[in-house]
Image 1 (cartoon, rainbow, N blue to C red):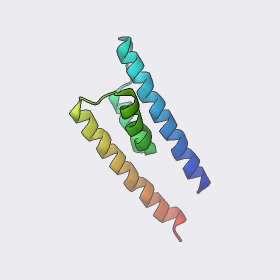
Image 2: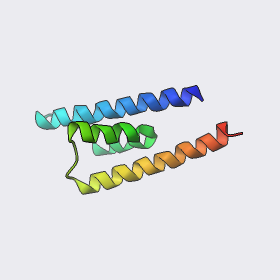
Image 3: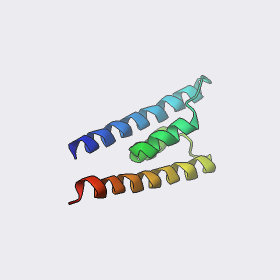
Length: 91
């Protein structure tokens, strides 16, 4: 169980950092991080990091389609992690 907690903490920190990096790149008109990659890290379990990053960096707040897909990724992630918990640790 501690491995899963460390993994989730790490993926949330990484997701937060990716959103920050993407916002910085957007401001500087540099190469951006693909949205698919942001969805992927959210799906891995980085939903909390993504949500906090959106608020902190005020990034991707206008693009409704992105926010809907991000929310869907976070919900799917919760379902996957809940299933893993039930399968592996809930005895």
